[in-house]
Image (cartoon, rainbow, N blue to C red; front, top):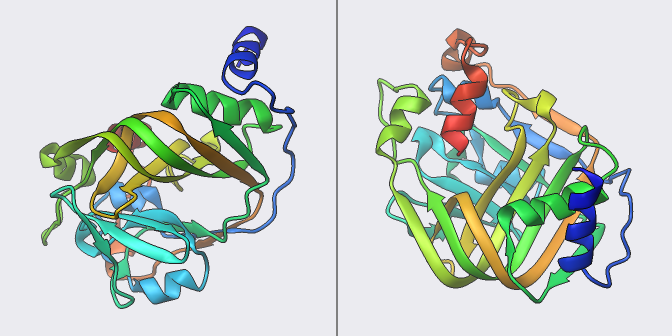
Length: 259
């Protein structure tokens, strides 16, 4: 971000906030499998929700068969389904891809005026010392709008993700209170994970949500923390071992799939 944009954000969006350069983080990101595996159609894993919670109480991912979106916070995991609804995940459900941590925010900022997705991301970026570090991000509040999508459950023979998302439904949540959970990952993580911001949303009554495409926060609270350790667990099943994990169009595919 250039200096002019930084001043605009600091002066008009976070007045009264003592800016700090966040350089070091505590905790660890625990990740199951690779984003490139999902892109290639590896939609089944052996890690249960119970197993996942032993490594983190905050994060996102998906479920076996690509059956909706996973959102985790406050020691709870919810399944965000293709009809736009949400339900608690059972501990015996399994995931082919998930990213979790034990959330330890180092920065908290309250907003009493509307702020867009891009502006909120800019405020985080301005306070972190380097784009080469991970951030865990949580936003609670009333959202003017949240646009989401959720991929429908897939069955064998599995199609690549770009084909699966062609029929994904999208939803608009207007003037809803809820929680947004996400990570900011460095550009070098593309393919291992999702470079940039990856966020999921659920309403406060846990009735709906999905993978976030866009949003505007009307008023609420931002929390984030830097994380500098990654624990990556790779599957060893036949689907993963046969998958093409480095296709030529990987970056385009992830950008298309993740919006």
